[in-house]
Image (cartoon, rainbow, N blue to C red; front, side, top):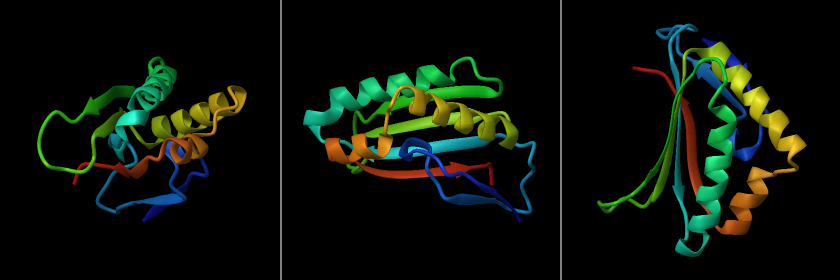
Length: 128
């Protein structure tokens, strides 16, 4: 297994992830984040998600960016984001770019999540 270390802000934070030996470094990489957002925090959080997604629009290898809001069902997560990159290299470059922008903008995603009372479940994925 290959391991890529990412020490990044909370919105892209995972200490490390492994690429299964059945996966390819050239295969698409997906980021799926699920959030439980209190109603009082929803507008502020959605504004910040749009800010993050706008940073990704023109990056090489950025294939899809979706912010989804739950409209039905009994699941606890009311906001989901879905990102797709062409491959591991594009995803790694995107994470570095976003980290740089967060630092330039003095934005701390971990603090924002805590301040807004949000609970998150985040991960990187490849097709099984």
